[in-house]
Length: 138
Image 1 (cartoon, helix red, strand yellow):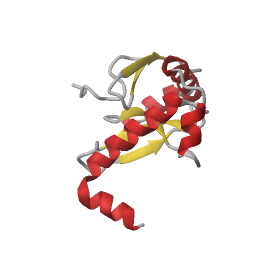
Image 2: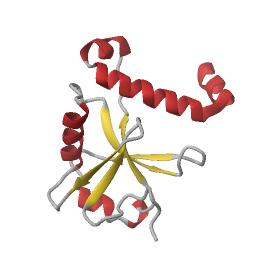
Image 3: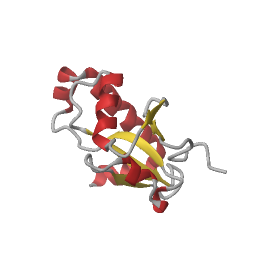
C-alpha cells in the first residue's frame, strides 16, 4: 500500500504539495510537461512572476536526511512519475531561484513573496538553533 504522501496514488494524477499546506492535483497524459503544471499553479495561486519557482521531488522529509530533486521544465510528467527511484517521494512547488532583491519581489508580486516567506519560515524551523547558527556563520 502506498503512503499518503506518495508521488502517484491515482494513475495519471499528480499531487503537488504547497508550502501553505494545500495539495493541488493534476491529471496528466504523455504530452503533459512539468512546465504545464507550473503554469497551472501560477494561475491557481495568482502568481505574476513564476521564474523563481520550480517543481521538486522531496525524499526523506524534514526530520530525516532530506534530498530535493529539481525537475526540468521540459520533462514529461509521465517520465517523472514512472521512474522507480522517484517512488515514495513528494512533489513540491518551491522557490528554487532566490530573488536578488526580495523587497523588489514584494513590490512586483506580493503572492510570490508570501510563498517565499512561508517556505523560508518552514525550512528555518526545521533546522533548529544549531542549523541557523551554522548558516549565519557562512
